[in-house]
Structure formats: structure tokens, C-alpha cells
Length: 186
Image (tube, rainbow, N blue to C red; front, side, top):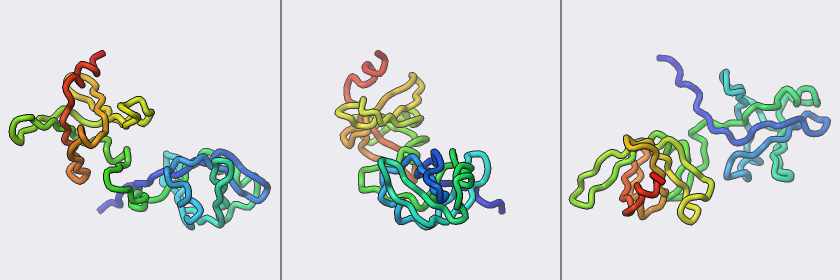
């Protein structure tokens, strides 16, 4: 049986060498930057090949960046070679989220079903293609970008609208407020 392909989550991306001892400065992508200082091992990925394991000697936060020092990286030239690599952990090691919070990657690809106002019937609207986190939604609520047969539909990710999110089943049930289709057509 073939090995499962690597599934990692990117926590940061290395920008440049920092200092003379082989440290690197990395742009932070995680909503949990405090966890970076506790990591002892990560995977470095260039996005095209299998990531390689890297032991962390130290990591600290400085002016919005994470400063990493990896084992075996002890010079400016060695650190410069790491620029552009993504710092990842296995997907299974993502931080647990509180109830009612979801990772964007878990929502993408979910089928969206509209509950009928009569009985328990529902009809499939489409599939989540993306999640907009720009604060443009209702009161800053993220918007599900749903590809439907009628075109793109933006659905606020609010409890009153997304009444059931079943990630293992890859299914989101919604009760669309009156006029939402009209708003999306404008």
C-alpha cells in the first residue's frame, strides 16, 4: 500500500537570514503564534517536493516575526538557503479550535444544503470554494463562497444561517435569509 501523501499545515514562511549565527526571520501565518516557541521539530517545504524534517534549537517572536534557529544551520549562507521555505507541522498537529470555530481548509469542499422551511427536506445549493475573511461580511462575519448552479453565492458563516456544520460528512446545512440570493446577484 503506498504511503499517504504529506498533509501539513503551514505555520510560517522563512523570509531571510537574520544575524550571523544561522537564524532566520519568518512571516507568521498561524493564529496561534505562541505555539511556535514550544515547537522542537517542524518540516520545511518548498511546495514541490517532500518536506524535510528540521529540529529547532530555538524560536522566539520579535517585531511580528518568528526568529528560528534550526539544528545544522550555523552561518548566514546556510540560513540564506532556507529563504522561501514554509515551516509546517503535520495536519494532525493543528491546534484544537473552540466549539463553533473552523479551519478554512476544513470548510472548503463541503457541500452546502438549504433546509426547507417545510419538513426536514433539503436541497443541495453547491460546494464551498473559499472563505472570505476580509471583514466584508455581515458585521465582519466570514463569508462562505459557494459555487452553485446559479453562480457564486456568498453565505455568512453565522450560527443563525449555517445551522449545522458536519465536517466528517463534509456537509453544511443553511437557512438562507430572505433576499440573500438578490444581494448576491447585484
